[in-house]
Length: 313
Picture 1 (spheres, rainbow, N blue to C red):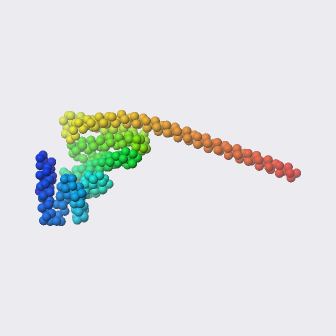
Picture 2 (tube, rainbow, N blue to C red):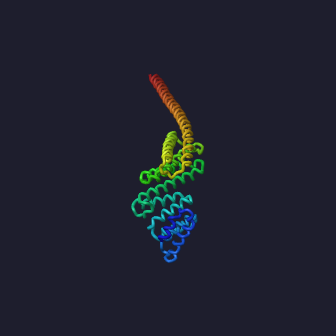
Picture 3 (cartoon, rainbow, N blue to C red):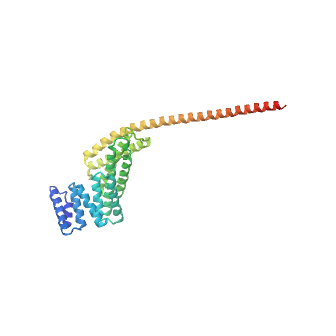
């Protein structure tokens, strides 16, 4: 089992990927040949199948591991989550990630990173990406059905912010921060496209999107400056420059959208005020007409009473 784990953990060695993946699979299979109930070997074989993109087979293996172990192997949750995410089954993936996160927080999940806190940061990152990917998929509707994307981007940002708070790795921090900025960029773009998708929006939403873009631009420019000064940043210079270019373009667009939205809201307020005044005027006219009607009725009644008295004389 240990040999299989070692080979699988060293897939990134240049020129050894296929061999190491094959060796890992072979070791897991040997164990299962001798011990069919070895859930850890089965879980390892599932990771090999997933790595080979045999997702259906991998999912079957992980589900069997969960069933036979009574959910005692927390890794099966994490591996299943990755499979569901690859299959674009976002609710199922999130359920598995959150189940693993709960175990990482209460200490019942094994440590797969340097520490339990690192595990938590990694899973929060996975959860954020699942929400981000779900939002992007939702946007493909490109009409009113894309409305839920907005909330999913917010969930992605919330989880990235939590990951940044708990993170202790300087190199990982730049990736988390960049991903947060990228999510803000996509979320802002989603807000800017609401009108063409026939989705209601407010000036406040556009203003928040603009603020997010401006903050992200400043943050990524700082990351790029640090990289140019020799800091260890695991993001390419071209990627950072591309982000800055797109972000600046979206900022100008957001400013224009904000001006238009404020104008629309001001016009809507003016129309509402005119409607309120018209309704008030109509109400006052009706009140005056009712008063005149009562006065006329009273005058007629008085005239009838006067005539009745004259007849009695």
